Image 1 (tube, rainbow, N blue to C red):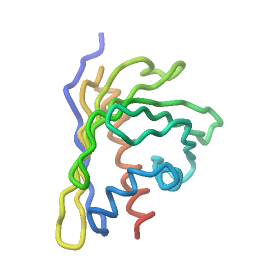
Image 2 (tube, helix red, strand yellow; image 1 turned 30 degrees about the horizontal axis):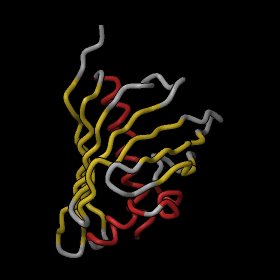
Image 3 (cartoon, rainbow, N blue to C red; image 1 turned 90 degrees about the horizontal axis):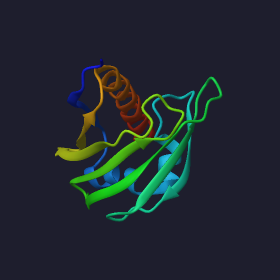
Length: 147
């Protein structure tokens, strides 16, 4: 039996204004440039409706050639403060069909922005470790994109 955990939290200071950082999350063409946990992984936006209750769907191409798909629904969008969305991997991913939730908060820190990601409703410690690594890599990609 695997032990569920409540949430993982990842944060990063991005050297860009809060509105600019929020904007990077709000446009499909921007996401294709940075919304990936590593430089050897590309992302394709399949569906993107950046409105409350709008759906999204992304396909990643991994270094090993696999192409996992994740999707969800935007729950809240409050520019430039926060956004929340569901996060559900599709089969055959090992965490397929498990509803999880992501809250992204944007905190102004002078000329920079602290991005705080809380990913909750996680099914296991292993899933939590996977998502921490993924979000840390994704925020590093965002920081490089906006630098």
